[in-house]
Image 1 (cartoon, helix red, strand yellow):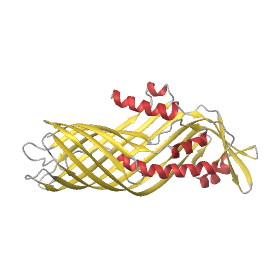
Image 2 (tube, helix red, strand yellow):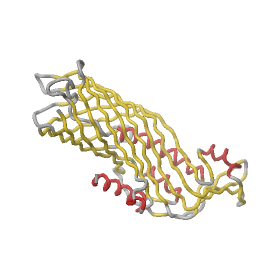
Image 3 (spheres, helix red, strand yellow):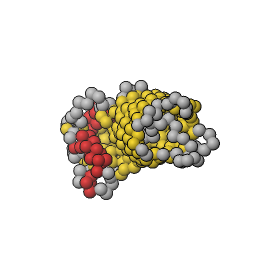
Image 4 (cartoon, rainbow, N blue to C red):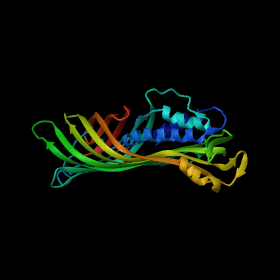
Length: 339
């Protein structure tokens, strides 16, 4: 628990507390929304990859539940996948906000799961489930920073053994799985008033927000088909797998702030420009804030592999991952009790 909190706090500090304001004149709302579209498109590549963390057990097939001994396992894993920094910085710069980091390898997006797997019966299959959750609302440690983190990951898979040899140390399975990932991170920026300009029917408008709280939001549902081969060799089990998935992802931002609209520097009712703001991609517009969420669906493909150390009924699992769509990579460590 302490280790997980430390990882989370580090990510928060990097993303929000170490950021540098870059004060500017009124931003173009159109430019902001273009940046949001890029942000969402890139997150649609990264989120499905991150959602596949967990349940990457070394054994391609764990055996039958009905047997002596019955085959099942329970444990936990923690890991990360990388996401590109430039598209995130590009969007946040429109809020006079800059992350002062040059991470060419990408920013590590962490994840953890509690997971379990049971062997099948009659037919050679097994079933796995995983779950991870974190919400820092009302946690004094995060409230003191003005930061809130929301994270939930759950999923399940079923695998069918094509090879479970007793003569040679090889196991091969094919399977399908579903993953749901939802998350977000928000913070009070402390940058004062900001405005965004836009045009409507030849008139110039601006949207003024006061000392905004900015949140980045993301979510994905992913269906994956995968193949997994493992080589049980006494106290170690090397393994390799590949997965092809289709995802329904969405990502964007949410602003909480006092919001006012102006036409040629004259205050106007927000209802007067609500339809126009919707055309720009803003939703939920009120005098308390607004948001912009973009949905993208697409294919994804990854490869993963590693090895486990088998210590009696304890498995120590090390996994590395690579995502073909955006050349991102990841890694995880898992520990479990397994019969």
